[in-house]
Amino acid sequence: MMATPEHHLTQTQLFVALIDADDLSLAQRSHLDRCPRCRQALATAQTPFDRIGELAERHTPGPVKRFRLQAPISGSSKRFFRAAGMIGGMAALMLLVIVWGGRIPRDTDLISGDQHAEAIMAAAVFMADVDRLIDDPLPTPYRGLIDVLSTDGGDDWMDLIVPPLSVGEPTTRFHRSKGEPPC
Amino acid sequence: MRELVQSAASGNTLAFHQLADHYQVAVFRLIYHRVRSQLDAEDLTQDVFLKAYRNLHKLKAPDRFRNWLFSIALNRVRDFIRQQKLRRLFGLLADDSPETDREPMDPDAPDGFEQAGKRQFWETVTSMLAILSATEREVFILRFLDQLAIAEIAAVLQKSESTIKTHLYRAMAKFKAHPASAMLTEVLP
Image (cartoon, rainbow over all chains, first blue to last red; front, side):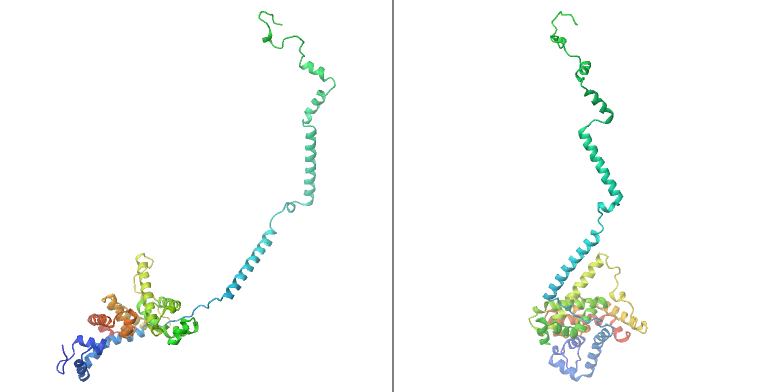
């Protein structure tokens, strides 16, 4: 609808004017310039939109912290931190060895001097027993028996226990011929 | 400003800090108008400037820094809102109320009147914006809350000015017809 001095701007034209007055036709713009009623209508239509911007500004807080970039780490700083880390790691390792190394138990730490001497004596006795057993493996109660066996008349004694076989006597009965009487 | 942008693009952090100081309030407000949470807006603003610093070398025209920055902010807000929706979907966010409801009362406020007015205003705005389509809502907020000109809105949203005007006209008509629009001029403090 064309605006003339007799025809005021419509609601649609007022919205168009609110968005961009240049979008109105030349006639509409000239009417708006000259018509106080249309200017008042335009101001009234604009009020809620201005008001929402005004209230939004009032009810919107501002930022608290300012934006700042973290300081970049340079190459030399990186090398420094790497070397410091390695030194620190080695120092920690050495400290660990010192602290825990002293806590590792050793055999000599567990026994006193007397106990040490007793242990040496026991070892000597044990070794003496080993040597004696090598020379004479029989236990003491059986040792006399060895002495008996080792007498000079051993052959007689053995003959007593195991009778010697006579020459020509068959060793077993299977060698007897059939019909031969047993002995 | 062009020189500052070029200097910052070449790695001058001092120049970028000057740019951040100049635009931080505008970016913060743009974000706050959409997320309605001081803490979230603070974090997102920091994200936006960090992202801008990292991608500044990609900006071909230093004159467009402001619009480019606002585009980053809008994209970041969209990502954030999408994440919020997903969290609500999976029950990671306890309540479904607007973010302003979760904000603590300002201890510096002389009384609760200002806080109540603030809450009532944002609730009214939320109810009025709910009747708009996503594009109409975005255009409307950019024009009347963020106070951007039509040409700037077109640049930020990468749309033609006539498209922006069409969406804005529809949004204004719906807004005007909303019963709560009278509250803005008569009731709200």
